[in-house]
Image 1: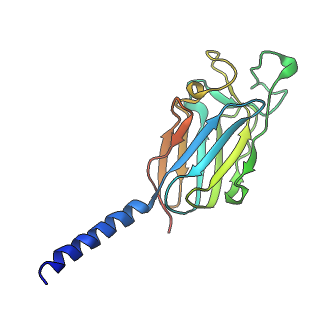
Image 2 (image 1 turned 90 degrees about the horizontal axis):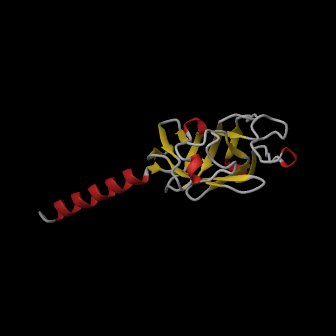
Amino acid sequence: MPNFVPKFTMIIASFLVASSLSSHADIRVTYTDSSPTDHFTVQNVSGCMLYKGELTIDFSTSLGQLVFDIDRNGWAGHEFSTNNRVHQPLTIVGGEAFVKNVTDVKDGDNKVTIEFVNFKHGDRIHFNVDVDDTSGAYHPSVSGLEIQGASLNVITPTTENNGAFDANAVAETDRTSCIS
């Protein structure tokens, strides 16, 4: 019997550690440059459900000083030919069931917030929108370099966590607590 207690205690301790690790979630956002519209994928890469929260992408800290170009006649377009200006309003194209609300994005804005609900492991939200570089240092199409440094913020009822886009156009939050 004396050997049983240490083994039992070790099993319980392992279970508690595993449980606490699984009570966290990561959100990954991937940006893909395309024409005529750019694409974002928001994915819950954790092992848990996020019942509600909001995710904000903020371009104000991006190397390319990115903005949303949603209006053909707006000031945000930086295309080579005014006859062929690319623009695209923000449109949810996948995972609509997880989207409760999206902030109204105007031409030239550099921030969007998406409220999400019942977002479980593996679920994805896809949206299209045109994004332009306003720094003048880069080509109008946006690659990983221009989006690098843009911030990602996820707020749930219990936590707030941040991340930033890297040179590969991917951002992940720090560990985000699940809501039970």
